Image (cartoon, rainbow, N blue to C red; front, side, top):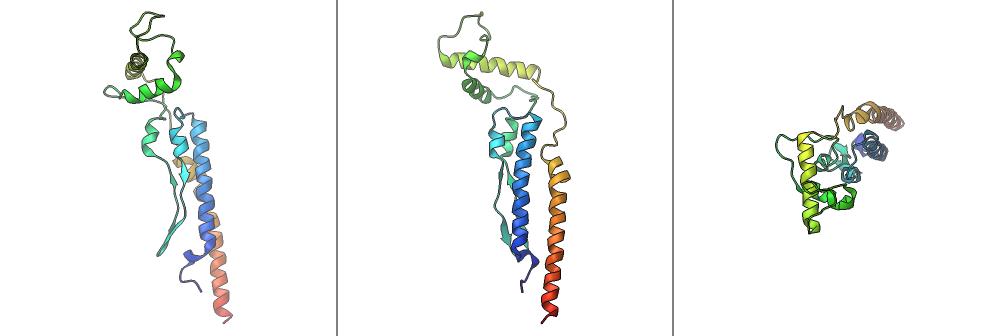
Length: 176
């Protein structure tokens, strides 16, 4: 007989099943909310392995918290935002995607590619400081699906299997 009900392999399977489902739901919600700009946060969402210890079993969904900052729908800065993310964005998109270079007459560009990238990044940075690009509404991306969808199903299935396991243990004890 097992020392703990948590040693039952069914509980690890149930936990892994719902952690994998949570990963899929988080990815779906991030896409549905339209908060993907770099894709870095979306790509960082991963379900973790089931871990066992004395008197506990756990698993989790990981995502890089700092990457949330890159994928926010609105950036409100009290001070001037940092320049490096804007430079990376301009380099990824390409300078040809921008109709003009701030501070230069239309059709004229700085002599170097680096100066052009920095000029465009500075222009975007100043524009976002002045007025954020998109207004952000309620962000229940992480809590709502977990609280309203995944956890109730998980606890229901857990109770069902715990009851079945308890009955099985009782039957084994009384049959001796």
